[in-house]
Length: 131
Image 1: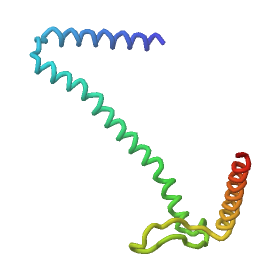
Image 2: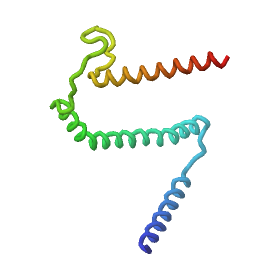
Image 3: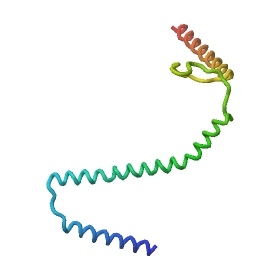
Image 4: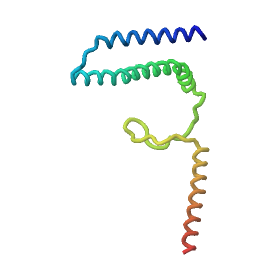
């Protein structure tokens, strides 16, 4: 712990010496020089942040590349393919491809739609009787 404290104080002292050396030779800047320095001081964190984000993005891509490759090979093996009926347009210039579903999904959707419509019908009846 003492070594870390000593290193910190040495760094602080060196920084103070550097600061005083730089400011000893500093001259007053004209208005345009002040504006240039404002732009420089503003740009440094922005550019630095951009490069940090690019580095993080590259590391993330590298990390997930193996998992993506495994998923792509699994999807090409046919392990998760389901035969179904295409609904909507298909082919070159054929319009919008809406969905793919098998018979079980179509039956489930039909059943849910029937329930929903019957509930809406009952609500409409109840509203008319109350008036």
